[in-house]
Image (cartoon, rainbow, N blue to C red; front, side, top):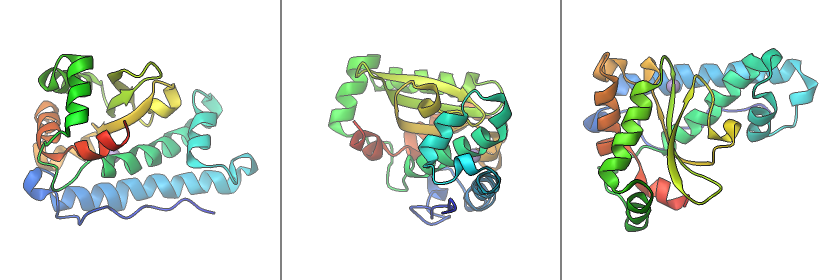
Length: 200
Ligand code: MN3
């Protein structure tokens, strides 16, 4: 069974009013994410050890293996983008459900402190990568960042509640070089906190 590009959970124009234009979504989902899926399927086709494995299994087994860097990059990016599309919503509007807000306050000191930490993580990820809100094995929320195609599943840092793509292809049409502005807008207008809360 080949891996497939999942459809977006909204139209390509649905996030435009919240700061992610149709062209960004068409290219990011239809070209970038599709390319990771196509490349991953190419690796699986040539490697019997990968056949029949789930995406999670492939991400974990290829992590930190120099001879499997291509597999990891593409499997990781497939996993990351599946989460990323779900982690945004046209109707999100920055509303944070009560149980998540209480948890953010308990673990970061407040919603503003959480957003600052997330923005800082994304802005300081040198080059391409991701910022994450995860819940660790200790039950505490934390913010992390990973380079390139890596993610909290691979690093074992916890369960990802939100993931924000800070590769330039994610924001350059809408925010040019202003990655911190993209992150602030993402947290205030695009992030799907209902989805995050559902994973608590
Ligand atoms: Mn991307």
